[in-house]
Image (cartoon, rainbow, N blue to C red; front, side, top):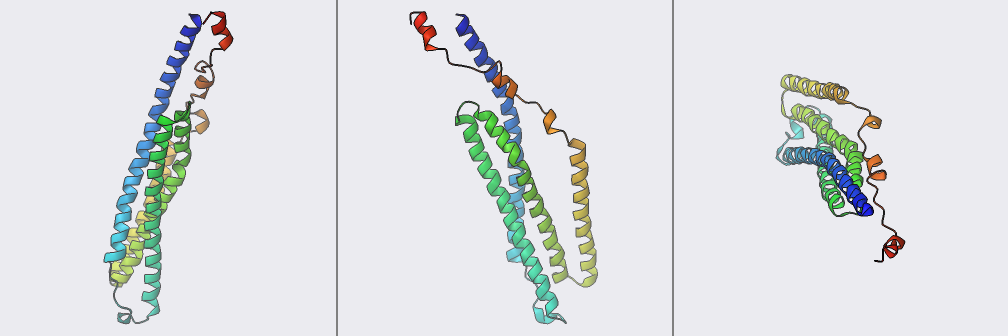
Length: 211
């Protein structure tokens, strides 16, 4: 009876700890879905900029190397931006599908493994998203120089560069405000390895009880 009560207590404690870990898993999962959605929108914008933008012919320029150089940089930037955003969509989709599958259908302790895996992959996804965003704005800089007169191009270029610098300063300001030490975060490993560690009852005990 005591062995059964102990097993039930350990099982209840482990279930509650897993439910708490599931909250963290849901947080990371929702964050990835948000970033993936925004990356998909940016990828659509990049495709539109690649297909719909028609730069003026080279012969309209006094020096033919200027438009050719601008076009070269523009299409390299917009293609790189599209690929970076598609990479984010692919990463978030794979993490969402495989992470959820492991958390729900994996072996004992898979919820912790899936949650820690999502947390470890977050920086790679965020960096790819940031690169795609910056490359998209950089392609806008090239676009205005190809399409507008130099006065308007100079102003629009200044606005774009200011936006990039503002994004950078905002990023560091927000990261500094919400930064925390990973070593001080709540960890449930001690619960799973301690009170919630369920061990099989030895068969000799059952034989001693005549079962």
